[in-house]
Image (cartoon, rainbow over all chains, first blue to last red; front, top):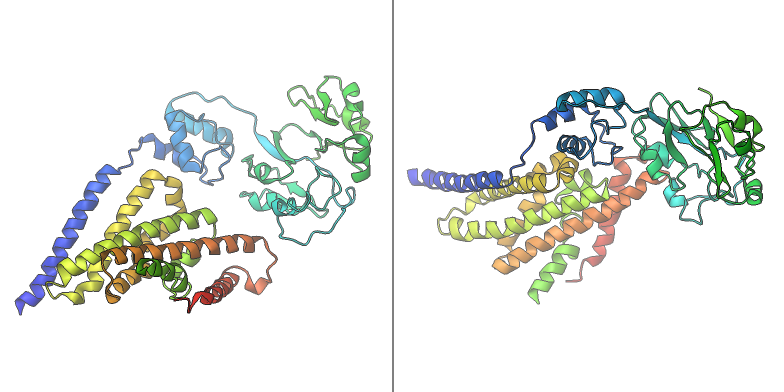
Length: 266
Length: 190
């Protein structure tokens, strides 16, 4: 009678012991050695796991910072505040960088850029672009299905009334998720103080741009002549502003015949 | 020949998720993204195959000689729990990202009824050692196949226009049932 109880108990107990011992050995073998500063750095990071730093999540970033592979101010979301706190843990001075902000470099909304087809597929720009580059006449223009809005983890992007995404500068952390997901590479991270943008990405010749969008850059070079700082260059029929040189005077905005260069109102 | 039969049966005909309805919890929980679904599939494959082998030994070397067959469930759970702990350690070491992505579903493989199901079915069907391992692997591959296919379906569902009452889990369950119906097409093959 007592055996009927004792044997199962002993057998199960011994089995448990064997497995436990095995696990203990395995735990030693697979132990993850951690620098004690990693959890401290990790606690300072925002914890959004957005991947804006180029590492898969805040844990990987914290490890890279402690190992010295990533700079202490490498977190674009946390900005100067986090960089300072991280620098304190590591005991090093952190230089300050100007915060950046995402900007939608296309003005081709439904009033200005006609469509050549209707698109009924999945509501995702990266899907739509497979169908012959998307429904717009302009090959470089915003498709407007809001993949960037879905990619944003900080509620900084919303779809505007006219079919172009709008950036909420207050919320934008410059993680770069939207820029990475946009199939047309329309979104770019630019310094926060920069309010003059060339809102066009079209590298087509002026004639084709004119036929497909009324606010596109036609590469006329009028802006390069009017700029006092020579900050604007035109390559591949597209004007580009050198943000280091630009003084935000707005002369190019007035001169631009199509209105492709705009001064952002904040 | 019998081994081939067990493989086809485990992966397609008697698919654990879609025809036996075992292991639905991770099937719905970890199928939102394709890469985590693949990770889950690999983890379950490892656990299921190894659990099949070890439970076979436990059954025929310990339980049967001592007439302790009634301890089968608890002994098998013990084996599976230890294995899952082991897998957790390996994944934590090799891929912290996957570890984070799997989250609570990783320790939950312990209570994944598909794993316990396959080990008990191995004994019930009186498979020998090789067949046991093959059956475990086949069941796990079937699980992986189903969860990966379903993750693909769900990734596309995310982007589609779905009527409001059906959004989220409802449409996921409906698609899962449609997948199960399509897998019924394999029945009668063996």
